[in-house]
Length: 118
Image 1 (cartoon, rainbow, N blue to C red):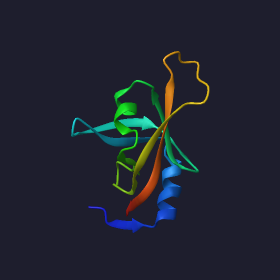
Image 2 (cartoon, rainbow, N blue to C red):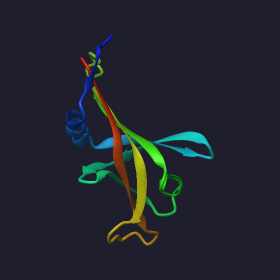
Image 3 (tube, rainbow, N blue to C red):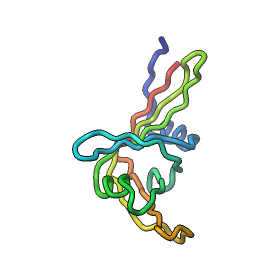
Image 4 (cartoon, helix red, strand yellow):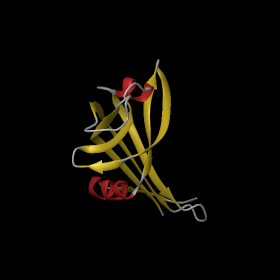
């Protein structure tokens, strides 16, 4: 079983910036929901997009949510994972060709937890 080693905030965010897909964790009618999403790490936090009327956009605006991304080697179990906890802000995306519109979701990292699987 791989050993878990805690990572500091700076290293955790460096690793998070390397990932392309993560999982946003939020609640719908008091039940947990997890959704894999493409994202990027920007100056204000974790940035992702969603359709304007989607369940995700409605559920997370102003809520404290979690976001997780990882990279694990299936052969030996080595790798890392980073979890970000913070308040989400939903804003209209800057120009879009989608007639229904998309929104940009920003998760401001209030707590960053990183672990390395050695």
